[in-house]
Length: 119
Image (cartoon, rainbow, N blue to C red; front, side, top):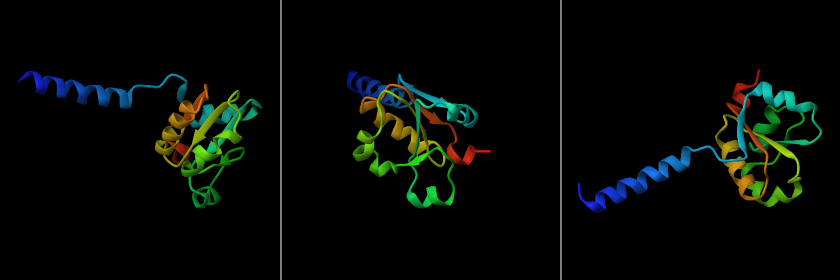
């Protein structure tokens, strides 16, 4: 293998490692851990599913801010408070957590398994 192939291989490996590496400030939590945070007034709960999904099945105190609207609505959230993010399976909420991190939020929790894991 030549030098160029090695360089390309290293770039591809770095890309995949960066995609799956945990981001500082974002923690994956269980449904039970999310429920345990319900009592804390310094936590805001965001459901990033579509309004239709939210209306069909949601839990209080989650507030519906669809992922597509999150960037424009992020300034309505308090950066000093923790944020718990949920979606249907955990994929959109993971994207939302990364967006919030870029927007300056420090303590973000993504609910593993999303609403599908709710019991």
